[in-house]
Length: 207
Image (cartoon, rainbow, N blue to C red; front, side, top):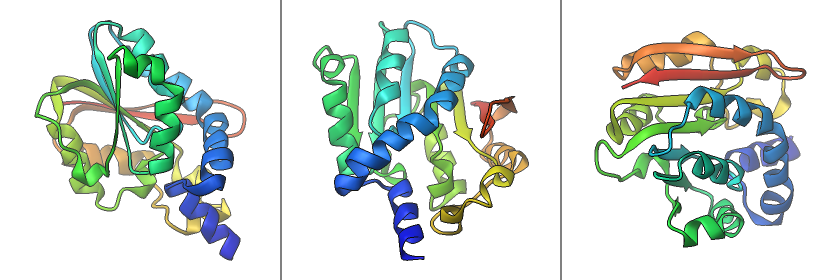
């Protein structure tokens, strides 16, 4: 039980040697196909300003920056170890002004309203402490007509994984859509890609 709780805490907020060198790499592998799918769904344009929430080791940030060379990519994460890892991985992009990385909690997100054309977060929704309020904070920093993409695995997929009985809040497709509708988003839908192992889901909503 102690190990299971520890792994759940690491999944939520990686830290220390295990978080940097083991959990971070596990995230890169586990999220690779979901991130590929999300990039397609985001339909990035050259001048888009993009926010990624909960970027892990920052593997996706550079791919987003490559797709938006005339825009800006901002990443936030509340794990100091993941922030440091992402800054090292993306140093060239940061030095060139294409990526900015900040350590902050989602609850403390502080950007001017209408800052971002696109917002993406992958496999973080399970850990939001106040999802109804957190989704509103995300909406506030988006441009009118901007797109939010939430990558996730469904409750049905995850409820039998031992670590998800701690720290995690699991969602069905309907749960995520209801959350987005309640926050006032429009054109809400869930896109699915069947894959071996876990299927990938992306909830898409327009401000």
